[in-house]
Amino acid sequence: MKTQFLTAALLLPLLVVAQPKAKKAATPAVDPDKKTVIADLDKRFPEYAGISKQIWDFAELGYQEEKSSNLLEEQLKKEGFDVKTGVAGIPTAFVATYGSGKPVIGILGEYDALPGLATEAKPDFTPIAGQKGGHGCGHNLFGTASVAAAVEVKDWLKRSGHTGTIRIYGCPAEEGGSGKVYMVREGLFNDVDVVLHWHPGAQNAADASSSLANKNAKFRFKGIAAHAAASPERGRSALDGVEAMDYMVNMMREHIPSDTRIHYVITRGGEAPNVVPAFAEVYYYARHKDRDILQSVWKRIENAAEGAAKGTGTQVEWEVLGGVYNLLPNVTLAEAMHQNLQTVGGINYTPEETEFAKKISETFNGPKVPIESAAKINDFRTASETTTSSASTDVGDVSWVVPTVGLSTATWVPGSSAHSWQSTAASGMTIGQKGMLVAAKTLAMTALDLYKTPTLIEKARAEWTQKRGADFKYEALLGNRKPALDYRK
Image (tube, rainbow, N blue to C red):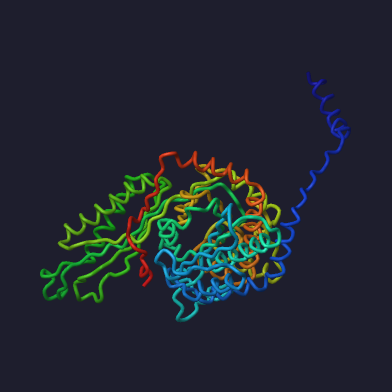
């Protein structure tokens, strides 16, 4: 037995040598129209980088994006789009259309900033005095890349004479304001065949992934003011109501599904320690991948608020400000987008960008990720437990009324967290802008596939119909309320 094993071991290298060399897989040829898209976007990169930087400088919060939306609207008008502003009762929302007939391909664009996070585009935290917000989620890049992609598709439709419509949706207040929900509710996506979107990130991926459904509200407690030392018995503290609610919700965490997310901030807690607070407010978010579970958890949060009010002798009311569905993944569309992302490739840093990335990565509170991974494309993954994002997005609602697909590109230094000063800084300089260009190319190239291959749309819609169910009826989680235009004020 030993002799046989030894003989086989000695012969193995010879057998390996004797095998003919495997032929290297040929790189598939890039469609000439896609080559034109890539070349044109490369040529126009400085222009789009400038637009993204302007929006980064504006740093306007949800439903206050007047300058940002106007800048993108004017760019689209200049390119020959028919632009309708103030749609769905939202002054900073718009829909821009070019072409006619089917298919109708939509592209989503966002441009709202986050409260706080105002920092210079430097690898160290350098606050910008007097600025309320910062683009810690990179929406300055999001809106710009989507417009750039739509313009490229428009140019191709014009050159080729191909039938079809390209439509870009200017979507405000994604960060907690649920802007797209009102646009869905208004029926603005009813005639669309496929919707494309993307999001800034720290890696390049086009997975068939999902997200968490989300519901949020401000709970407002009303009490009775009194002198906190001389006559506290005459007061009823609204802050006590808030704190009692928070305590009960925190105890509840042990008895809800472990993958539920609940977070809150006390936005008003009183004016002075020696005055019993007559008013206090707490802002709650709850998330879960299953909308039914989310709704049941939310009802318990409301019960906690009512119980807290009774126990503290206060009154409570709440205003639901936002609510979004989980993303409905579409493997057919995701595979097509992934192929285009592979064709485009990731980004390579210049020496200056490498130095920026190294310095900023030293500030991360978490596992270090090689900065070279910005040049790589993640392997494709279908929707599963491991590909459900812990974030939420109002793109989820769109995906339940029309087949939708998206991607993420490395606009931030690998290892960065969204909603951080580090992501804000990268979103305002060339690292973010290069990632934005990858997204614009991938979106435009995927749109061309959809126009040229009707069967791709048919297959995607068949998958979408099967996944959402024949009896599905869309109902917004935020109900029939009007857009919460003042939720950031």
